[in-house]
Length: 215
Image 1 (cartoon, rainbow, N blue to C red):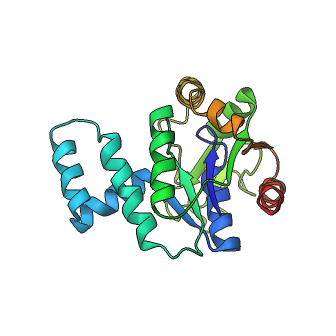
Image 2 (image 1 turned 90 degrees about the vertical axis):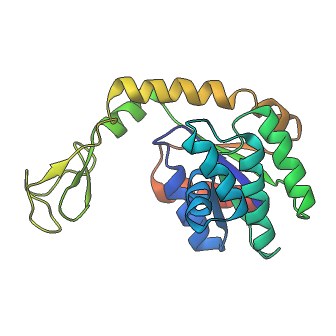
Image 3 (image 1 turned 90 degrees about the horizontal axis):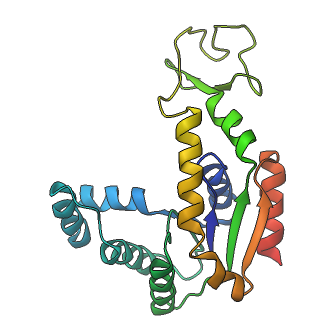
């Protein structure tokens, strides 16, 4: 099973990908993580990417495609792939089809986690964490039992990510829509696009995704 998981930042792609890895033994292919790993390992593709980044340039589609090709080649045919953060353009979608075919695979599903923008803004801007142990909280959905005190370790050192603000979240949403719009029509024409309410409970979203994969 090879799937693309789509959704704006904060929609829960990371959480759902982790669940798919655990439940189905799939592998999450995050281009950012793969790029960092390849650079650290000093692979041929990683060295090429490092040189590009050191010049302050963006890594090309060719390099990203080579990363994905290498990763798929290293996986057994029985291991499914979750593509996270790729493709972002119609050209990348075409490249992915070619890479999958080269590795004897095909794309089975494109699953988009749909969100309500205002609700997503509230979800993201309300989250914070314990600076001591990393426990996660939310102003309204999951506040500490005792205000100002971490349930897990008792610390009062709470932190928020500087980019968890309304302006940044709405900008990310606009960027997501702009980047995703070009790739969906082609997949829609192939009848492989499904949409799930990403604002639901984590287990409900997971069950909906499993239902799609089983269909």
